[in-house]
Image (cartoon, rainbow, N blue to C red; front, side, top):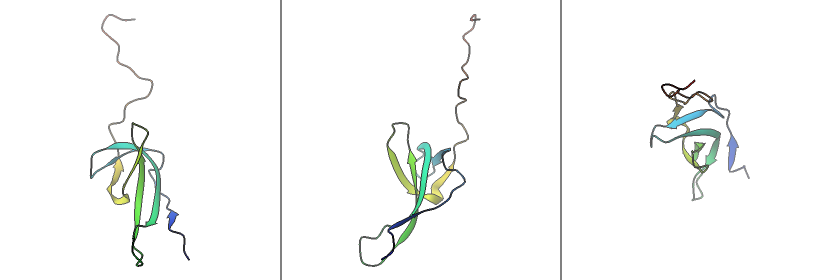
Length: 84
């Protein structure tokens, strides 16, 4: 019997990404080749696990993942006029 899944390397792991199907952004936690069939016939699919801002993970097809280019700059804040 084969494993029902296997981890797949991906260039965007641990980076901020966008799911093009839903527009939702988050951190790519894993890409896994999974048997998604609930019948006796195997059907394998590469699923991306993305952790959203709420901390909950969701899945999408790995082909739907793209880098999120409009990432906020960590530690940078715009100064208010008149502040030192």
